[in-house]
Length: 313
Image (cartoon, rainbow, N blue to C red):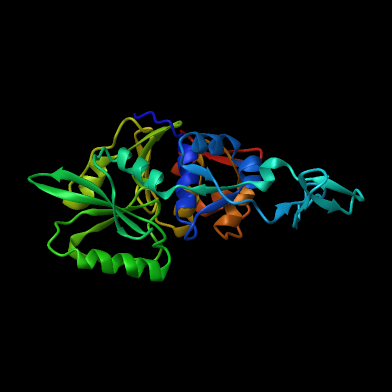
């Protein structure tokens, strides 16, 4: 299992931001309040860099933390906003004024390193598609690409057209943190979409890209389960293997529940509040068990208690 300078939770945060807007940006207040450890790691690795000052900050003197526009006070040399609850001007915390930009190139290089590829990634479509390099697939080389924002229809079309123009290339894989929902198209030249997040073998904060699984996407060969990870699953969570035992689910909401619990486990969050899970899958059920009616093996996979549920790993 590879040990990297970036924890899996920090990677998850970076890659989620990687699929945001044209220039991925996160307010310093969000980093300070919800991702202080991950933010520190990403800043240390140069993946997060400081951006422009925020023009809107949370009012920390109200319960709702409503947004306010701070003003520069020349006398105190600080940014302030007026708190009506306290009847006074208050200084804005330094972290709240900051914003952080995701360095796309450093993020791309990290994914390249995960794939064990060498050389500098080559930009194919500006800020949308990179050629990370090649690997040997039998007696030929296959190319690994990394895409972003292709859950947006117009961006997907740009990437598709770019791949189509790369004529004469042997089939390769296009990685993305998640495969766009509803996309059931055949990519040009035999290229295949591969979910980067679903291709990682994770153990605590350590992780690596399962290149054997990536190869199998192109060859169609069965790949043995990697014993380094206690949890493996198919892309749609219809099949999940935990501690060597395989479970198969056919119901849509069953697969959605499994997906939520698997991803929670990957993030290091052992338990999920049951009511939140049921709401997320838009179920009117009162208990998880109602979604698995007619079978009992789910109890060997999912634990319950005190209003929470979790994956039994």
